[in-house]
Length: 116
Image 1 (cartoon, rainbow, N blue to C red):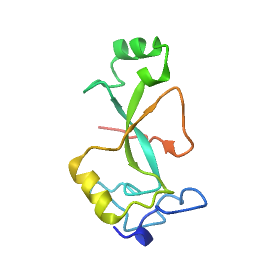
Image 2 (image 1 turned 135 degrees about the vertical axis):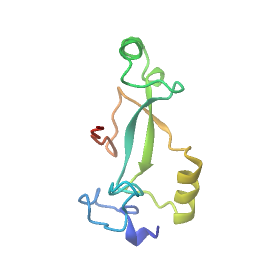
Image 3 (image 1 turned 180 degrees about the horizontal axis):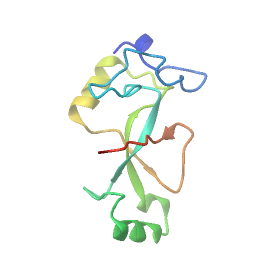
């Protein structure tokens, strides 16, 4: 998707959700090709979920932030990644990176998703 159609390459922070109406997933979710990276419910340690109480207890006991990382999705609003690079990353479903849950960053957030 061209940079003028998504919330990427922005210098003044993220856009208001829904500003870029063409940046809409097949599931009706806005801003998936830009506007910020997001924590997922999966830890970098394989297929472990944040919903597993034993995992949370184990990670909370880690001494260094690098030992407690969460997988990321999405694209930062200040990024200048081309449409081709975005599509390649989306299609491969990898390469988004990780972030320690104990060291927040200004351009990483999360979405609240309610599943039936």
